Amino acid sequence: MDSRNSPPHGTPLGERSREVFRHLVEAFLASGEPVGSRTLSQRLPGALSPASIRNVMADLEVMGLLYAPHTSAGRVPTERGLRLFVDGLLEIGELAPDERVAIEARMSGSGRRIEDVLIQATQSLAGLSRCAGLMLTAKQDSALKHVEFVAVRPGKALVIMVSEDGQVENRVIDTPAGLPVSALIEASNYLNARLAGRTIDAARAEILAELEGERAMLDSLTAKVVAEGLATLTQMAGAQMSGQFGGDDKMLIVRGQSHLLDSVEAQADIERVRTLFEDIERKNDLIRLLELAKEGDGVRIFIGSENRLFSLSGSSIVAAPYANAAGKIVGVIGVLGPTRLNYGRIIPMVDHTAKVIGRLLA
Image 1: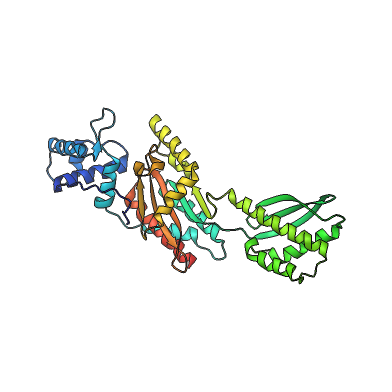
Image 2: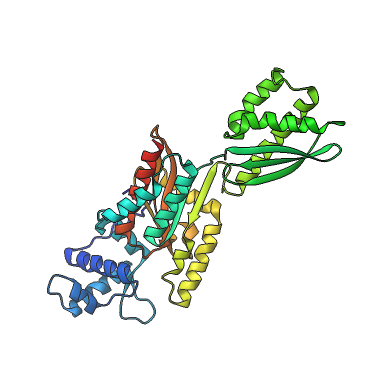
């Protein structure tokens, strides 16, 4: 696990304090409730009395690692305390065999588009973690299924673009005066023969070279329609993608936001989740945060107000980068949830999912 994003805590803990603190955080992460000295006395293997445990808890509170919410006699870890626990005391377990099988099974299948695999990976991670799943990847242009020009009035034609993922875009273009309907049909057939099953970026240079070299075997009016249509299709593809991406070349996939409501019990929790949903809507900020996870070669953990984006919602992200066949980091997958995550279970889950994606890309 890469912890370069952690603040230097430099908090010395004796053996007794370390054990009390570790058990308290583990109990809190399991229940979400403040943990009292009586509960800890039942969990600790030694013969520490509740009074001795209360003294240790008081010391930990002075160190800024614990605090008492409301008037409760129990304590919960601060974000600083969670960081200390995650970086130095967390025992990361092995991924359960059934979870490993579930991740690999949901992402398997030959002939599937990489976009579908990435979306399935995000959904799978969200379902297994009961949190929101996040995916940051490079922009993927959709291959085209069909292109058609339809005359709408003299000098105007409608360009219809249908991509293989089912998206449809329409736009009106100018056409040469006196253009016969047969020219629109010929232009449609010409582009379909060269674009079907390919992205516009992949075929654009080839089509332009044919037009410029007069190798397209088209009359001048039809060639003008093809050139105008190709330019319009390029713009339409860009506009189509802009609705899915938070940046010019990044795609952000978020799945399973409804899981964030599962643990809501109090009005304060509802307000926190509402703020978190607003954080998710600020996609560019979320993308910049996930970009930080690409800097390391392991799992990165961002806790609460360590990052400005989550300063109010008190949320955590566990994320890991994945690489393509050439070993280049091309994306990040992760989990977003409350700071009370089951880190010991989710860290290996995220790590394994990232490795499976890397194998599929290879």
